[in-house]
Figure 1 (cartoon, rainbow, N blue to C red):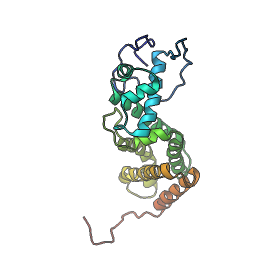
Figure 2 (figure 1 turned 180 degrees about the horizontal axis):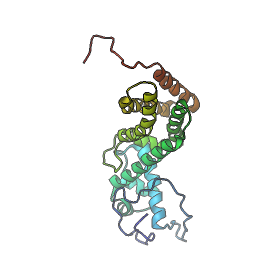
Figure 3 (figure 1 turned 60 degrees about the vertical axis):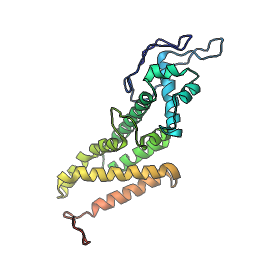
Figure 4 (figure 1 turned 90 degrees about the horizontal axis):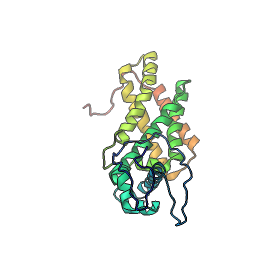
Length: 242
């Protein structure tokens, strides 16, 4: 998805400035690029776009949005600044596409992991999906958990967590109904559960101990046994009531 047939001698190519236009939901391997005798790698427009996205993802994860410059991205890619502007309209456009891709990837991993089974197994599947994403797409997760300075078509990390919570909302609602709880509270509880997993994932991103499976087991332990012991009509025990 690009607006160019290839790199020209002066680095120009057809403008493609839509921030999130053409963002794919997965990462495809680019075909090998030809290397001319001058030493510079010639790429098709599609290959160059993918290269800029990969480099941008790495730099944004390393330096954050404010610490990243178009100059550095262009330098790492071995192109001039106008090439970045022509593909993405600037740093904001590149960032938006990177974030959109990562958010879609995480959402797909979580929803794809919910294959059914016992309710406790579904909790395990959701927890493992997030831990797997953090493990295999560390740079992407680092970008997602930062506050975004620009608007994206899929919103912020908080809205992504909300999207994931919606995926487990129906499952939780059925469990609530079967156990005599108010099913209308399922959306709130699904937000609580997914938020707990997401915050634990942020902590694990830095420490990496204990191992992924052990963290998932403890997450499910807290969530499952908390749900098992829930009161139908919980009351506050302190003085404050509002």
